[in-house]
Amino acid sequence: MFFWILVAILTAAVAVVLLLPLLRHPAEAADDAGYDVEVYRDQLEELKRDEATGLIGAGEAELARAEVARRLIAARKAGARARTGLASRRNRLAQLFVIVLLPAVGLCLYIATGRPDLPAQPLAERLANPGNDIGILVAKAENHLARNPEDGEGWDLLAPIYYRSGRMEDAANAFSEAIRLLGETPDRLDGYAETLIALANGIVTADARKHLEASLKLNADNPRARYYLALALEQEGKREEARAAFEAMAKQAPADAPWLPLVNKHITATGEDGGTAGQPGNPTAEDVAAAEDMSAGDRRQMIGGMVEGLAAKLQENPDNFEGWMRIIRSYVVLDQRPKAEAALMTALKTFPADSENGRQLLALARELSISVEGSGQ
Image (cartoon, rainbow, N blue to C red; front, side):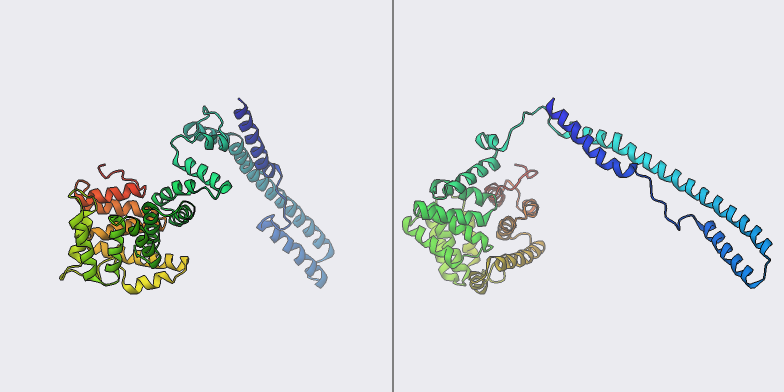
């Protein structure tokens, strides 16, 4: 009941504020009596001139002046009545809208879309009982870390959530803090490196390579680190070394490894008849070097340009599976999720959801928290 009383008071206050200007009578300007008034004024001036020059006698001038003055007064009264009546009708319509229609429309919209039956729940209570709301969970963790920035477990928890949400800069900071406070592990190093690669639009930068090498020292059989290090060789134009690295991964991989088809594609691409130079979305060695020296803003601008070029080439050649994987991730990095969802739907037309490539696309969508509605999953 208190809620509805408050709503009524606020509605009445808004209505009063809107009605006050409508209740005032419009000010009458001196020159808005209409065309007839101007004509009669000119006639009075003309009578003065004719009388002064002797073209008309004083008696005749006085009679003519009285007749023109009578007509002038009548014209002013007629104009004032017309204006007052029009303004009054407009004011009444506006007052009716403010008093009746505006509150009625607002009430209908609230009844249709609002939830007046829900109890009040301040932000503090929502943070204390977030349920399954990932946004509230993240906000709760962020509030905790703002008060306890040295809590490594909190950073370790948030880092992959940031990554899956496409908040790559926040993810990079969280991974860095977790490594600083808790030490290096393959998962933390790989996650940090993968975030740096995503920020560089798929380019394995020197900083990312350094963390991947450190991860490989901790776990020599780490396929995640081995894949990106092989990809770095491919991007640098070292095709033979990259092919050897990918082939070694394929030989040691289980038959059902989910990443094996992607590795096999790179083996084919780096073969004698393959080659990655000029393929859609593959950065050159110069791109890699340039990205490492750029500021965050310049790097983002470069990424946007590369993504536009990749999108144009994918329209011409939609069979480029790796290009679709890269552009979907790039749109998430650029915080353009609608475009990422559209790219996913387009890619699934070429690579159906029940195919091996389609399953990889859907796995990437789930990893990046992209909606897969309408994909058949």
